[in-house]
Image (tube, rainbow, N blue to C red; front, side, top):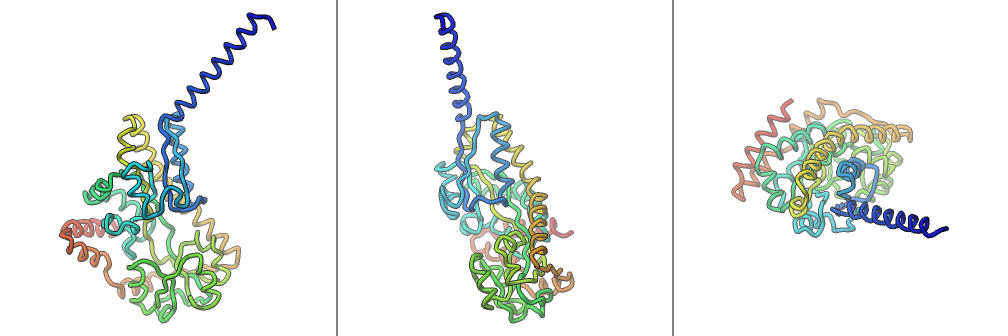
Length: 341
């Protein structure tokens, strides 16, 4: 190779190296870390798609790495970490922050919402129109992006008698939290707090008569094997919040913030149809495996609701002790209006 040609090749190599370095630098402009308490699974695809969409729409200026299964902090830590700037984003279960997120926690009160779609519609309206919801997140120094819907809950067990209030009397039913046991106990069922991973064996042994989970978890844990019958749906609540720390938010340029806001709204809208699809697929797999779904009749559901305490009213009363009864009553009133139909 003659000298002029060699110099041209060297120049091309230098230009290529500079271009690659410039691209890498552009991609690394904002590298965000998202702390998630759940393990990586197909159920989190809308959140994964959000991260990909942000990278694509910002042309690589922003990258988001989701760290699963508590790798960046446990479920009861990630909210605080995001607020402090130790991580950038977080998936936050309100129930893990019962003292800090007393308004957001209300989204997991049973018998308030009729469907996952309704729960999320109320969530969007609450953040937009009811000051306490934004104020709670402001106090934790984070910003709301979108809200995870949860699949509807079914009773799953070996007996087909799970489709009536009388059929559940004296039955041992999987429970969790403080509110769920109250609505189960109100009809004479026996609440049993048990981890998801222990339900299969409990149904086999008879130490549990019915599980209480959504189809995705029923299918994933093969509960249709020890429990052929699934009755429902019984209950709809909302899941975790996706938030971004204000310290990170304030570092982002206005054009990127606008992309985040727009994409969060799109991801929120996509989450419900995604949930419907994946839960429907789970139900078909359960049926293929021998599982049987039985509807819980509206008349029986009305009996159950009538027998149960008004837990939304109880929540309002509990908030009165902190001097926030008027705010809570305003929230409850608005929620009742939004869920009336």
